[in-house]
Amino acid sequence: MKKGLDHIGIAVRDLEGSINFYIHVLGGELVDRYRSEAAGVESEIAIIDIEGARTELLMPTNNTTSPIARFIKQKGKGVHHIAYRVDNLDIAIKDLKKEDIRVMEHTRRVNKHGRRLIYLNPADTEGT
Image 1: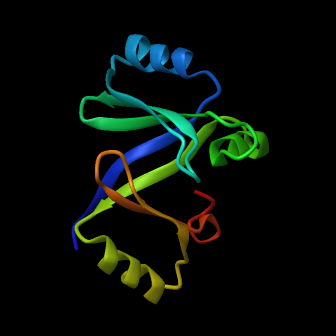
Image 2: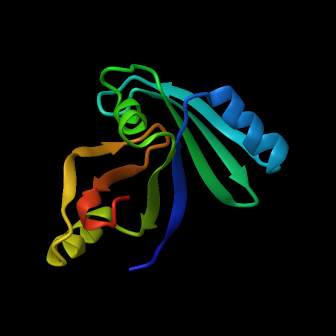
């Protein structure tokens, strides 16, 4: 199965300042910006493209229930996740389970762009 890096998710406290850095300092392009109040997301998200490499900037919109807010409280701002693209998510999940990599079923969803996703247990992926 073909696999590849899709994007890196960065937890931020100041979305405007972070967008400014990625656009003006790194030369990126803002390709999308949206707010999601879905349970387990509760973030404002900016997608930046730098010569084909994508970064998602994630700022919590609810400081008590957002997983991004919890992440920032525990670890500070920074890399929250690394997303990989696969040809078939269902097959990829079966393959991961064969290798004793746990998936976090409660995170399974379809994002704004119609892409299916699920998070892996960070304990099985070196903390990311």
